[in-house]
Image (cartoon, rainbow, N blue to C red):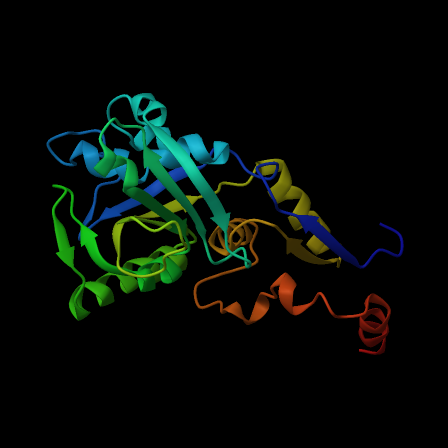
Length: 260
């Protein structure tokens, strides 16, 4: 590697990973991973209403197809997207506002709000949650602590957690409260063996390696876990968001590194 001592790897997209695996799928207080298509376990409408929409809105979410019951294409044809918005920081989530195509004036005025993003962010937006039967319940302190523990356990096991929420509104505006939590999903991003071997070899050669990515933070942390950057007990002090370094002069930072 000559004089190279520092290497930055772009972890955006799927070029480092194999097919995404769904390891945990929490709806209410139950993990129904692998059973979401069993109608005796999960009510169709809950998944189709708030999770299936992302398969059509975001191509990179097509892994969710394995969780959807019924013909989700019919839902896509009966709805139009009013707008889609990703919040300024990649870790804050994405929102889609949709309207059903209907002859009924009341249904035309009702907008369907869909959120996905890091569970810690989405959970704070939710006042209720849906269980596997499609019943809606208020989130009280016990449930919130349970959801927080689910999220923490996913992270400690190297999974990239993501949450989905749903709401209704008649006003075409960004809404960040009063939503209903649909699911918290624990995703595994298995890195390609050749990538793992390459990173390990570079480390043994003495290189300092950093990951950069435009993707959401839980996804990046899961990939970093796969490549050995994180272990149980790791903290977020090793992570620097782009918005915190945009003002740093490259020249001054390189000089500082050289002095160190």
